[in-house]
Image (cartoon, rainbow, N blue to C red; front, side):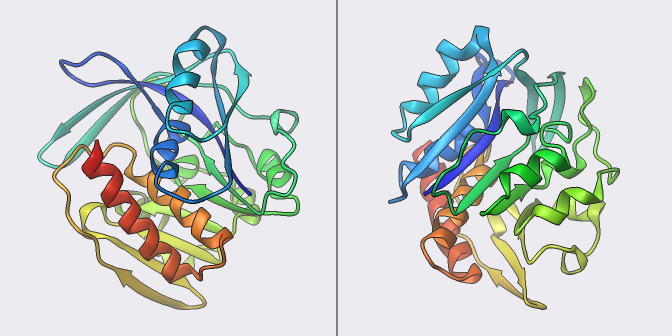
Length: 254
């Protein structure tokens, strides 16, 4: 059994109606293509529950709603392959008592949207008896309204509980050499160019097939596919290769 915990988001794109986003939504898109025993724990404001939770459940993975008071929301603008983000609203912080029981769960993908989503104490609770993959959004994204700020002012205790860390090239520029991060498995994603896996003092590049499609959610799809593969017994490099192929399928179908 694997699980995902994360806040949902309301995403605004120029000239389009707002749509659901966040780790729970985009991971569900990938899980539709995976043979994995999984459950998604999704959090948003109660007022958005009846809109967001069915949208996630429509992809076929069981979804449990975690009550919240605020839904994270973003403006997203793509230009020439670059993305600008603006924070409209900051979602709830998961406290240790918000963590659901996770019986027989071997791996968990923790999918923060901002640094305030999952404090170290909460990650410690999630990691009890299981392995945890963390998205580096939870390290570098500043939880303040306005243009999305990025910095390295995170609590280093967060990484104590992490087995695998997924980060982008932009996040690596902020956090430093991925090989020096105190995490057993580091997954550096390069967008359409693939990824690099850092494990046991070695790194290996994974090529990707370019897909001309909206890349929103590719990181969450990669992360949950990697978690499913690792839980299924694949080693890190093979898991990243499988995750890369799953991402290509998800984007091509969007």
